[in-house]
Length: 47
Image (cartoon, rainbow, N blue to C red; front, side, top):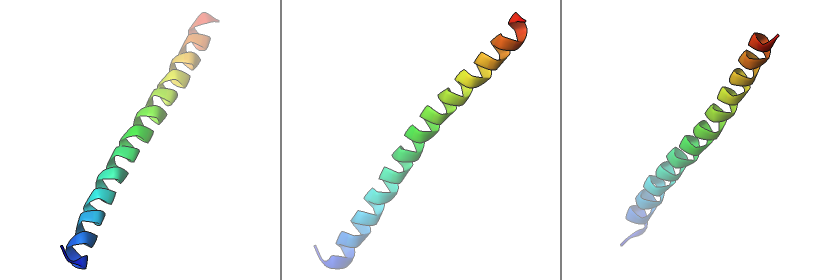
């Protein structure tokens, strides 16, 4: 396995990792925003 192939593999793995990191961040951020929106809706409807 020469250097060029090794670098290609590293880049491929890096892209996969970035994809999973974005997926996790999006999931956490999305649920957080959803919680805030629900909280605001409850506050508005309870008054």
